[in-house]
Length: 119
Image (tube, rainbow, N blue to C red; front, side, top):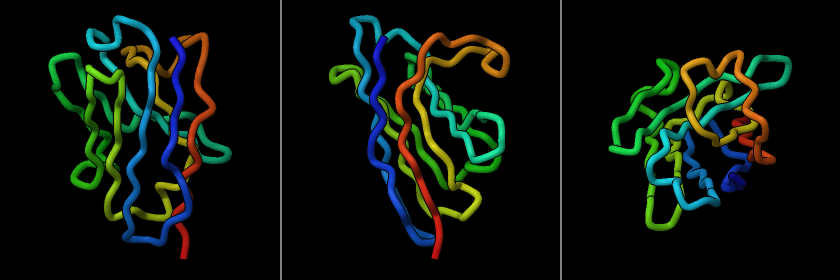
């Protein structure tokens, strides 16, 4: 599966961005997908999860501000980010969700998209 993230950029605190993830493969619709992020000097962290049925899970740090969604017909996933804070600054990645994501070898990642929140 190839994953291509886009939509990042520089935004002021309180601003918004919408990230997109384009996925290849014919079985995208049945996969539980997730957004992850990695800030400089920090481990990659889970941001949000969406199941094939549309169930949503968010990290406490983004709950109420971020919204994950998907369009299975287009093999796309999105992350709407509102009320951005400087601590949201990171490279954002999309990938499948695994319960052992902290230690699992995913095999491959996309290039990610940089989000920088700064005044």
